[in-house]
Image 1 (cartoon, rainbow, N blue to C red):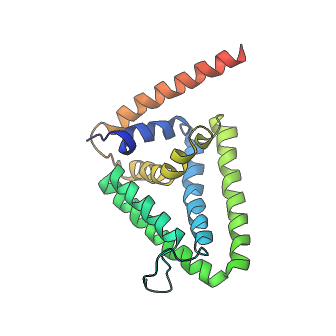
Image 2: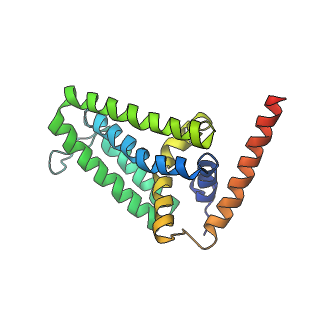
Length: 194
């Protein structure tokens, strides 16, 4: 069933989908969005603890931990089934990113993160410039694009592989909204070129 406001999955997914309608661009995002999140978590591992409670295996309740819990919780509110899996993937990413950060140490980790970020962002800009022929979503809504991007590539993968829908008719309704968004964008583009 559709939710409203901040947890309106159709609205968020239609916004994201309007910027990711080309199959090659979608594929590029599937390859690079989660590594971007993962490498952010590697860097966030080096932030100081925000609360002092003990976590197993040298895990720290720092910015990375709370960032991960926020993302995981938000995804669950968007869609309980797929969001729970995406939330679990966020937590696994945080644990593994913490392990990688501990192993590399800050002096090497930031260099690895920098290279990974450059590669991933370059790939995504190529996806938008060459295949989508449209600027990335974060230029129009920074927060929404960064918060929902990992969940939406995960949701797209579930749909492609398993035919998953949060509820019956979800993708048809989203497709109609995406088509409206794209048509509006094309009309604005035409007006600018006149």
